[in-house]
Length: 416
Image (spheres, rainbow, N blue to C red):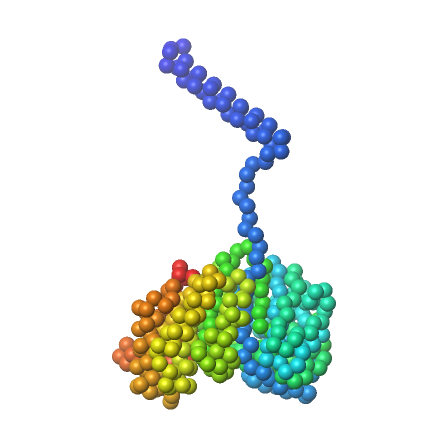
């Protein structure tokens, strides 16, 4: 054997010995109770998958009624609320509200299920009873809300969920979100455990009693809350189609973030009107949401339309206050510019001048952590004070489905 071949053989034998010794060392370590390290799974946390702001007090009725948007819960009925998820999870919990009620609200039974098809039927095998501290019923104090116990149910993102609430005698005023743009269903008696559609013979365009659905998740990075007025509420979007701009954003995020819509039609930043002002409801409707990490502020046009003397400095001062509160909780704040409104019966050249000042401050004033320029995205390039015709619903204030889609695509996910 020549010297070079001998060195090669010796090197090969040395490598084999090293591998054997390493294997023995690993075996001894395992036998001694030191297993190989594995990545630690992220802990499961509660994050909001759907929400709606309490917006109106509706009279409880004693006879069955069909209605299209203003409430109408009647004594002894079951209301099957249809809601759409933005993230998924392995369990769910719900929040019932009596914020605007006139007397304590007694709920007798509640259920949750995945929806089958496009009506009130539950997907077989998914109907679950919802409890509160182990009990099927709960009483919610005037001005209060109650969170349910966790319910073991696999909730997919981008899916419809049925939350059915029965109250034998609600009485007084009940709390609803009237501009749901989503058909829900009403049945006589306690039909919370009925998976079929036949008993649900009436329809409602409002969400009753329900204000939030959270899921237990390891996958979502937190929730994004969009707070605003009818434009965020999606009042001119197609019903039963989930085409509001926050829905479009949720579709783009594909379950990475919960997207919670806290729009109230007619809402204002500074003063109460339709619902408490954004300043007044910010704690409850934004800061208290499960898993919130970012808020998108899309409010202010109704302050100008309903109170024409409102100056730009008052609007921007309100924005600054919202940002201060959110930063105190460690949240990121994204501001949006106000959409054009020329052609709307309340919109004047003087108002549009104030809108322009507000938008200039939003773009350059350092009020927010980031800005989404809805104005530039939707305005007519040949008449910047107006919505582009394809984005106009026809009232020259609210967007069309195409306009809402453009808004949802304008938000940069990297800034969330």
